[in-house]
Length: 397
Image (cartoon, rainbow, N blue to C red):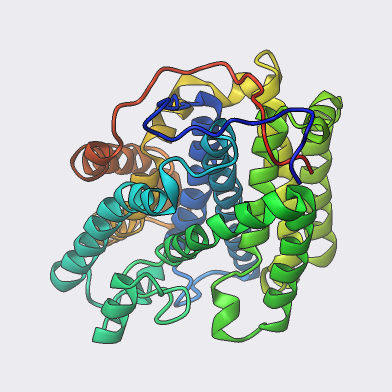
């Protein structure tokens, strides 16, 4: 729906170059999500889940770490919707430069580091970490030509999931969502963003639940709903449309983030980690609400506790190369475990402690080097942080 009260003049990318928003608190949230994924995999690496060399207690903790790692990916998806929507709002609800240029920019940003990490993972499997060791890495090493083709085409969320590098499935999911983003915006301009988001949530979660146990479920179709929620969060922060101005004025966002986090934690505690892990989609609704409410709260109020936490300098620095950290930390964990910790014969607890201290430092250093070579050249010039001032929008509800 177009608001007649606030006419919009849509300019092209050539007319007025839109400023690049660099939001430090968003980088901090990315870093926290990446660290949760790392903790999940470091724990799994420490207790050898394939051989199940641990009693029932750690097994339950392993299930917990799986759930927490999945939730962190859900936060990444919401952040993606938030960040991609901000320049759209600034351009009058248009993709800057058009749909083709949007895809080209996304490809330049996502694909070079991804393909470099894919080649690196394959090279390591074919040389030094390609033999079964009874660790979490025993799944990625089962490489065949179908796995390679699936990963090159970015459909590994449907086929050969977990091969080559067990974190790559989510990259395929996000890549596929990019192709639906222009359609989401088109529908939002016609029927209103809030209506379209509700419909997207219902349909995407229905598909996830209906496809349980199939290849479609592996692709987490409900993530499209979380992505749309992130878009709504961006409009709430930045749009001048009356409905979003009203939402922005509500003093609920910090409380909503805390309440959503508590609700998810209580629900998981009540139903148990195993039930949660095997029925993850409904829990992701609460995770999406938490991430989006936190993004709104920390974006609107610079002095909020959440903003100060997320802008902690070490988190912001890690957040700037969290994509590289996410892409290559798994094979690095295997190398540390296989060639350093296993020969020493240390126990599970010491292994985990090392991977969370000195090992984490080594992984951060290695992934930063990867970032400098394979990701940073494709980022373009970053602008300094800017204040989020509301701008006019054609999408009103």
